[in-house]
Each structure stands twice: as structure tokens, then as C-alpha cells.
Image (cartoon, rainbow, N blue to C red; front, side):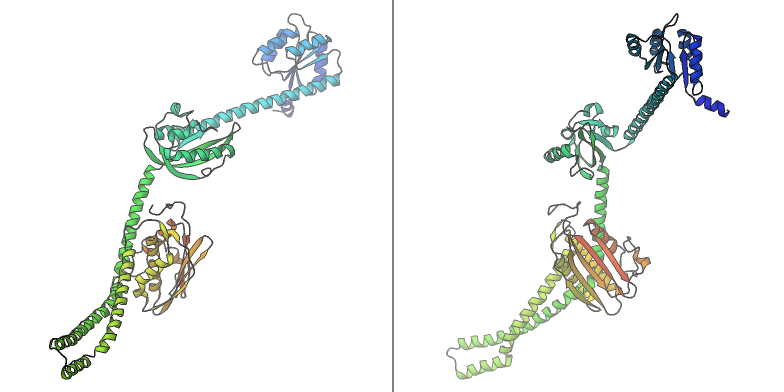
Length: 554
């Protein structure tokens, strides 16, 4: 296409309608430099041209014409779908106010009386063509936006229909305004049954109602609340009245001058069952690790028990001998009394027996024997209590606990593993009680202490530090052992990974320790230098993590 043809096609088109060829010629000459001009000598011909192609962008229409006058032409143009939006300017010799009012009332956009001044005509033609172009642009934009809204609504419908999660929208009065197919399947209510119903009365268990009513009252005013923007686990009701666990994600949207809520609900029944299975499996792993640790420590624990048992047994043997000797002296006194009045010879014999038996020494030694035996039995009792506490299977209750007491108890358990080649330094800072599973944390301490001892070849030192920073407490166990290489450090907490020789570890200790600390909302930090030693620092929140039970015994 030539440049001239392109320019010609891009220009707007004006249809001039007049029964006077002279007037048509004047209009053609005036408009042609800037516009494509079509001419019609009658109303009938004007209608045919306007309905064809190319359609004019503007019509300049005479009023007084034989056959069909301009008013009738305009009425027909407005009746036809294809031409009703074409702007029409009356160009006529009728210059009365009444004629102008009639033309504008029929739908003309302007009214120009003959004779007209060419600059005025051109200016008004340009104004109305620009308005026409703006109206066409707005029409096209509206059509595009309507199509885009329809497309997006269809896409949204497809997404909400395909998702496995229930999507529910409620209005400012908590009445259900949207209910997707997944919600129908999950809760058992068809959309026709759910729409318009009060959400909480329909789906919330009675025990939640008071808290929900309180929370929703604040949500209505501000669009905020504890559940907005978060994911919460709770229970919901199906149509048949059964409860099941769900995960709710809630968002607020402003609509119709009110805060509406949009919730995504996921049925987590299967996940909860899997969580229970995983919890049972972890409990078995924890107990297996405990039993393995007890097996490794059995010889040391037996040694720690045998020491006090040995001297208690020796003391009991000595005490038995002392009782026999004392009994002999008492028998001599009894015989002296049975003989009647004591004589000096008999008394001398008894006194000599007392000296032979060394009765005064035995009286003092018996007190020491009893004290030593009592101390030995207390040591045995403490070792047995620590062993029982550590190996307890069922102690899975969250409670406020003294971590230092648990640390000391665990240290007592592993002491025989450490005392012959490690010097243990205690740098305890004050710790508040912590909401935790004490028996599981004791297992963490035991794994770290045993690992620290095993990392030391020959003689070395272990330093235990504790303290509090803000809302967290820490327990740091440092050794002067061989250190850990970066390659090994990257795999420290992998299950079954171990660098120890066979029989020295299961590869579960640090993995389980990491899992336990993570369950408490804490973390384990490792700082190690090869050839100098390693420090494991356990950080724990003082308060309960969000997923922990909030009451003791839960």
C-alpha cells in the first residue's frame, strides 16, 4: 500500500447529505484536505451509505430535502444498530430556536445554521470527531475490560472448582457468600444449602462459638484479628455432625463498604493420622536411642553402683563382727548379774574382756560405718533414680522444669564415661524454669555429653555453660577434643550418619537431639575448630512454642 493510500485509510470519514449539489461541492472542498468525504444527495441514499462500509465517523445532514427530510433520516439512523452511534450535525437554513431544539432533541450532537463560516465549521467538525474517537476508545476499552473480567471470572471459577481445598467467603454479617465445589464435598452441604447461612452456626463446634463471636465482632470493624493472615489448626463440623481437623487460612477483603472474610479450608484428617504415626515412630526411635545409650553406659553405671555397694557390704561385714564382739561383752555382764552380788574377781574379768574386744573403739567406728553406709546407699538410690528417670518410656508430658537439675542428673548418669579422662568445669548461670519435655531434653544433654567425652583422646576438658538471653536460655557443652571438619559438620544431624567405630554409636543421637530441640521451638548451634575442640549450644525458648500444649499434662 502506498504512503498516500495509507494516509487516506487512516483519515476519518465524513458523510455530507444535501439535495443541493452546490452545497455538497462546498463541503467537499472544505473537508477533503483533512478527511475522507462521502456525499449523498438524498436521505434514502444517506441511509444506504451509512449502513455500508466504510461507515462514516460523522454525518453532516441537511434538514429540508425532498422525499425524506433530515429529521426522518436522523430518526432512522438512531433506530438501526449499525448507525445509532454515528454523531450527526444538522447543517441547515432553518435557524429558529425551535428548529434547533427539535434537532438536538432527536439526537443530533450539534446544529449549524447556513450560511456558516468555514473556520467555525471545521472547528466544530474536529471537536465532534475527537469526541467520537474518545467515545469509540472508551467503548472498546469497556468491551475489553468486560471480556477480561469475564475471562478472569471463568478462570477463577475453574481454579476454585478444581482445587481440593474448600474456599468460603462470608459477608460482613458472617453469612456465606461463596461456596466452592470442594466445600460441598468436604462439609456435605450443597451450595444452595450453604449460601446465605451464618458460617459459624453451620460449621463451628459449640465450644468455639463464644471465642468466634468475640473475634468476628472486632473483624467486622477493622478487618483484623488473631486469625487474619495466619494459618490455624482447629476442628469443624460436617453436615452429619461429625468433627474433623482442618487447617484454616483467613484473609480480609473490603467489599460493599464492609469487611468480608475469605477462608481456605484444608481437611487434615489424613495428615493428622500420619503425624500420629510419625510421632509413634519417633517415640520408638527415642526409646531405642535411650536403650542403646543405657546399654553403652551399663558397665559404667554398674561400676558406679558397685563402688558404694562394695564398701556398704564391707561395712556390713565389719558391723556383723562388731555385733558379735559386743554381744560377748553383754553376755559376760548378763552372767555377772545372774550370779548375784558382783565380786571384784568377776568384775575384773568382765573389764578385761571389754579391753580385749576394744569396745570403746567399736562404739566410735560403728557411727562412721553407719554414716558411710548411708552415704553409699544414697548414691545408689540417686543413680537408680537417675537411670529410672532417663529410661522412662511414658514421660511425654509438657511441664515447667528445672533444666539444671536435669543436666546434673544426666551428668551423674554419664559420669563414669567421663571421669577417668575428662575434667568437667561447670559455669552455670541462673536459669528460669522452662516449659518443656524434661526427659527428652535430658536425652539431648546425654548425647552431647557422651559425644564430648568420646571426642577427647587422652586427657581433656569439658566445660558446661548455662545462661539466659532475653526470652531464651542456652546450654553450651564445649570439649577440647579433635574438632569436626566442615564436611562432617554439614551432615551432623542426618539420621544414621556417624563417624564412630562400630559399637560406639547408632547414628541417631544428634539427629534425635536436633528433632527434640526443634520440637521445643529451639535450635542447636555448632562451633568447631579441627584440632582444638567443639561447642554445641542448645537454645530454648522459656515459654511454650506455638505448637506445644499450653497446660501441664497435655
